[in-house]
Length: 419
Image (cartoon, rainbow, N blue to C red; front, side, top):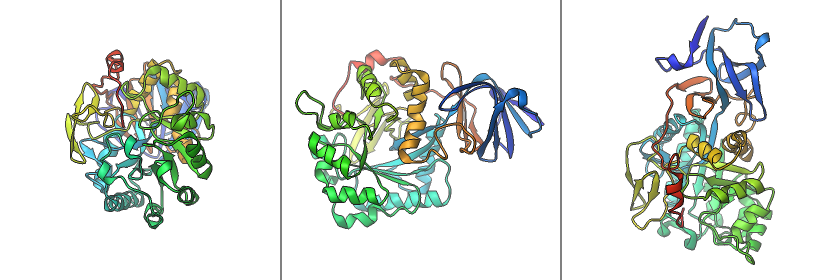
């Protein structure tokens, strides 16, 4: 039997068939357990039992030093990471690089996200995701197609030359994944209701985003199968006194999920808190991360534009926000700083996106039978270690030099229209 103290692990190692995690507070996603032991077998959680009932007969025991085990994070909008942009590398290797970058910041599963591009690029990206799923690349859930079926007035950083209508002949291409989830962000006013209905009927998760829709059209789209809203408040028609528009529909419709970018640039803390009060169990964190996450690069190219990072904020030369350099561990910390209870912040990064995609049998909480993809964090939510499907990925605490973490007041002084 081997006992490992997590802070002194010198080498990255894989958990073998049976491993016990002792001396940890365990947040299951529903409640906080003390004096319990978590047992995994291979890539799944086998049991969570009272510590007094634990008999140390397993091969490995990991001492968590009285810190906290929490569900791994799930990110439904990841454009890139590790110096790689999915649009530029729509390959299995590109997906692996993006996953590896985000794994080290607590994201155990994600949707690689393709920003508006040529239709042939969509084919390449979907083929890459399909191959990654067949190869069982850990943490790839499917694909998020953010465009190109968007509203030009609300295009944000998207290249207008790629924005177009969604014709019926595209449906076979968009519904081609045999495994995993396809999430499509579209502007409801630019897509015929019957096409939205067909997408939803074929298992596509349809989200409204980059939209200038009015409230009536948005509500009709929800009736036709729109499940949620992409980076709510950003790049969509705003809520006003007499025109609820897209934001009003998102907040008014209980059945709809909303992704939200909590980096200190896209959303004011008060706006975030209002959304959290209204969208109970349906507001989830996304990073909208670009290639700069997990990279030292401070500039990159996006559809012919140079994007610059300054103090954690990504913009083009005109100051238009271009995604983010946010990580999920930072998003959770920001959520807590913005006044949301810590347990709800974790659910926004794990349970709620899992529920949205319908993958809660595998992800989103720590209960028997779920994938052993979870995190060890300190009481102040500094990331200590990450396990993906039973394997220890990293035991090095990682933080990003992000203005959203320590310089929130500076970030709040620079809100602009955004992606």
